[in-house]
Amino acid sequence: MAEHTNKAYLLLEDGTVFVGNSMGKTGTAIGEVVFNTCTASYEELLSDPTYYGQIVAQTYPLVGNRGVTDENRDSDIMSNGYIVREWCKVPAGGISLHEYLLKRGIVGLSGIDTRRLTRILRDKGYMKGAITDTLDNREMLLEKIRAYTVSGAVEAVTVKSPQHIQAENEKYRIAVPDYGFPRKILDAFLSRGCSVDILPASCTVEQVTALNPNGIFLSDGPADPDDDPVLIRNIAEMIKSGLPVFAVGLGHQMLALAEHAKIIKMPQGHRGSNQPVLVAETGKLMVTEQNHGYTVDKESLPSNTAEILMTNINDGSVEGLFYPSVPALSVQFTPNGSPDSSTSWIFDRFIAMLGEVRA
View 1 (spheres, rainbow, N blue to C red):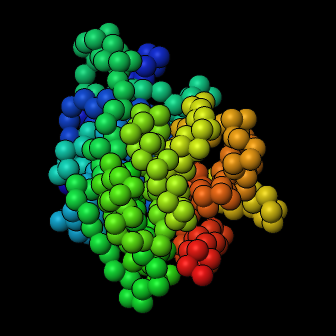
View 2 (view 1 turned 30 degrees about the vertical axis):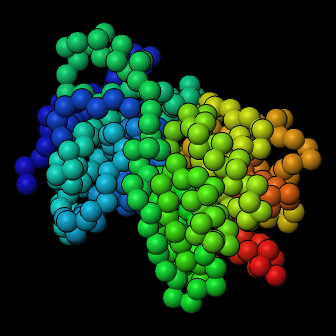
């Protein structure tokens, strides 16, 4: 296949320009520019709903070696654009990254110094930007970039109607308001005998309790948690039900807001698969996968409401909370349910909470 070498650019809101090559669809894509340090497949990363409205830059230098073997995979791409240092022109199988993005209508950029971009985002904080094939109307594009906001994210990515997933040996049933989360986390529940009912994000406490669940899972999702006051009010009603609650990511943040804590925007955020988290009660360290730009303000936590279970080693931010009166367990990151993972015990603790309430 001939090399794809059409000129393209990344324009950041502060006026910084990176010059590279167009990849995927030709055109312009505006979004919040973030970086990710994972080495996972780009199909999985790009279809992650927590990247809705963002342009993702991959720090790993060469992407797409394996190719996409299933051209008919039906996962939606959630990110607005994709940036890599270099993409593999002749993958081991299937179609190339360029072909994959082209088929999905996603604007991409390759050939820029992703290390320099990462340093800018790390030092100045993440910012808005655009991948574009022309800078002829640079000032007009800058105005559009600076005016860009990620709005209606949860509504855009949530399920439109309820879904039920049956566990083989059902012990418990969990209600899951879908704020926009990668579905792989459900395997951790199903393997532990938990059937799952996925509900649209706007579900009410009456709709949740009508399912007669043993517990509630408040999922991860994209964007600013303060953008969804109706969802926060619904959560405030859900936690009055007495059902055990487990919350992750956006769900963790909105649960904190429902309990009258505050959320603050982080200068850089936590993105990637190597965020170190300390468990207070054991002193053990976990390496976690994260993608978020907001955190719970520890100073705003009511002392009689929440206990801080985990903190981030790098910046001391809140990573895990326990609310004894709910009862609720919440974490900022995405735990891995595999038995050999350092974070699998979090699922086990939630399952134990389900058993305590049933007993």
